[in-house]
Length: 77
Image (spheres, rainbow, N blue to C red):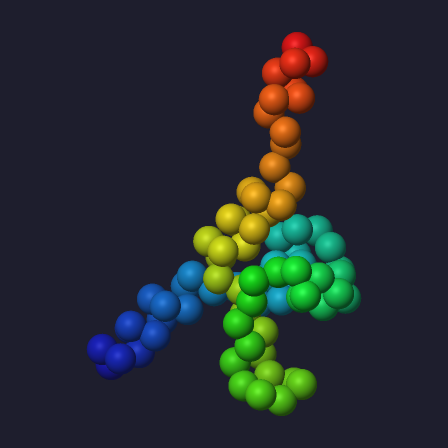
């Protein structure tokens, strides 16, 4: 039972492709196209293996890749 709790705690930090697509308001095919850019983990070696994303890595990716240029914003004010 203790092992299941540890596994559950680890999995809380991961989201599926479907969850990511819903969270971003995009289609699953958009997520599939962006896999080359996104940090992900593939659980298995077959094409049908589950792809998971670590939530904090996705947040860091979007913060670094799509951050608003604060210098430009401040200059325009």
